[in-house]
Length: 125
Image 1 (cartoon, rainbow, N blue to C red):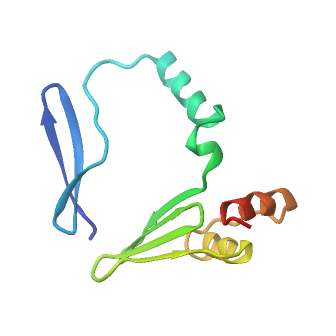
Image 2: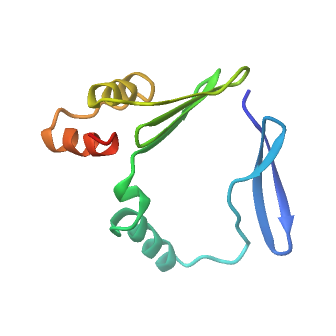
């Protein structure tokens, strides 16, 4: 029920694309070159452990259900219904952020002072 997808080819690269509100958007690219397990492990280590990795410093969540796409990036929530206008809003408190995580994304964040402090940083408080 969501976007239409296609894979475009440019030379030796393949580019999955999604048609979003009539515009084709490239998602990423890949080629058919063999990947070594060592390279995969190094890249996985980087995205999970390197201090400059966005996965170490940002809160990111995405979820789709039958009628909409939900996206959360730090304190910015986007709700895109299949039909209708996109809603974007900034979450203003730790309790609001916790509520969105639980109610919209099904993430039960544990009660923890250090986690609350990290969430407060994301919303600028």
